[in-house]
Length: 352
Image 1 (cartoon, helix red, strand yellow):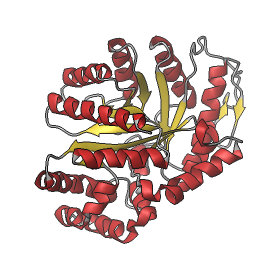
Image 2 (tube, one colour):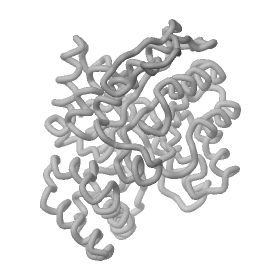
Image 3 (cartoon, helix red, strand yellow):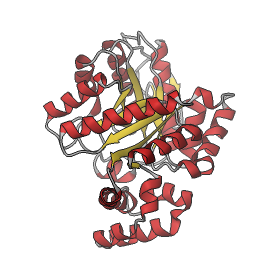
Image 4 (tube, helix red, strand yellow):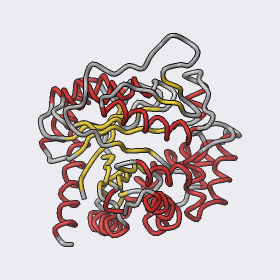
């Protein structure tokens, strides 16, 4: 398995500290650093900066959100970052949700599946370098009814640009299998992944005449090491509050893809109750409903032997890139956790 992490450009840390984290992570042997933007710092600016600070590590947008940029603007970003990094850029795209897309950016969230398909098609046509003429259900380039004629960019990618899609819903998973080079997933329970995720990915892969070997399965989770059972209990309790936010506070009143993903993996009743409590303002009550099993099944939290065992399960389930979110309150602690996790991934791969 490759090793990766995801950060926000600032991520609550001082900018210089986050840059130090990226540089030191490369020295530890990390393979990929994904940079998120969510509703915070933009990813492309930071990726250009981190490209100048690193030499080997792959850098990815994790993710650029549909609706915040035109498909051609996405292609321009990808070409620029791929060329200036010497071919180390991975393009990660995601639909986000109605709260961010409509509530923050003020653009419609409607028909994300069609917009994702057409965005990927347009981006790849731009990569090919010809004059762009595209007529779809969501995008028309050039815009009809005027005097504009098809154009091409004055630049082309000097290196391949793999496209990864962030997907949780069955329909978006099928599209990922059909058109993407990789899947950026979360809320992953390897024991339930066959039905919740891989069945849909495989259906999309089959449509395109491909198989699982053609898709990078990139899954992420918090990693934290507990020296004993008492410390493990404290780590688990803290994570319950964060998981309650994902289940109850992410998305809009009608759409929460994280809640739906946990529901498909056996926790429908608990997920619904957590969301109800959270939306009623009872944040502590919502966190109290999250079980230890939910935390440990979807993270890499535990004693070192526990984390090693879970990594084997993730590998055997089909994960090819493990995205590590290292716990720690200081830069030193985060890097120490990340370094040990990278070592464990290598041990697990070496023992296969």
